[in-house]
Image (tube, rainbow, N blue to C red; front, side, top):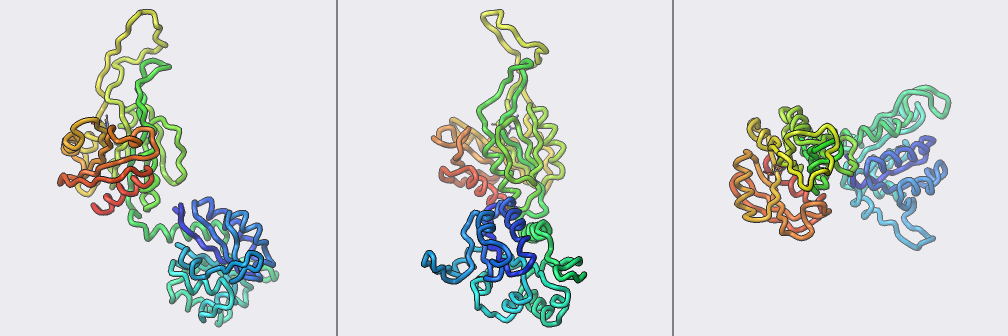
Length: 398
Ligand code: C5P
């Protein structure tokens, strides 16, 4: 969910500052680019070296770094951030933010940032309860900033009450959930097929093809980053998903892929079938390894189920169904025929004539053709960007 998001973490001076290390690690693990601004007091509680190592970025604390002679530009930092998190947020820093003071780098960054701001207060019980603190928090909430509430428990002073900073896991979950609410495919379910299918000949051999699955995996990741709940039905590939929220169902044959798709399609809002499904399979699967005794050998083949066409027949109003076409001749005419025959909303045409595109490669060059035969040609680009182009078309349809 936070893949490639720019997160600026502001760390204030509190005993809870040690939790910023775990928080940094969780944000990095969630895929975010993390940069950190610490107040001077925060550096007394936790070493900038720890946070810089965990975030894999230099940590900023002062406006001016005398060692390198560089100016840490608060406006640039504020504008870089997609999300600003202040954790721990002390009573002092919250008061400065509420009043618009900017006597350190962090408070200047806060005033410059245009992105959503989250703050996780940490302080002693009575400081937390004080009307001055509560008023400051209400002011910040009235600015649209989001508070991650402190927890009840034992405090560093020995007192028991409210004021403990929320745990790093809770902060991360809160941000992912809030961030997800604004995503355009939130609440939508998507089904994607990817990779080849392998059709068994005997226990050791199969009919297959060169599909790597890269396009389908990129589509699954892109749909998920837009907020969709994604099921990826994958033929045999060597690819790992970086987004662990995607529900991956591994299959081998076309028949298994069909069954997996049928079990999910009814509840799907979007289905993109990018798998290179074998068109034929051996009529019989030999139970023992076939011997090479005779000089020639022939196999009886029968058609595999056309998964896309099957889903096209079942498609209900409101469901979006997308297919791929890999053509070598009469490309557009053949793709339009497929689009109509399989009842698609649009078809993505890859040409085998485009060098560096389609099978096995990291890049692809596509043409999108919709039901009205409108064609849009795209440049050769990385499959991740191709996936984004396809998803933009889906968003237009929705
Ligand atoms: O008819 P053709 O195989 O060229 O169509 C390609 C499209 O149909 C792709 O989207 C592919 O995933 C899908 N397909 C399928 N089941 C098959 C064959 C193709 O879902 N048996």
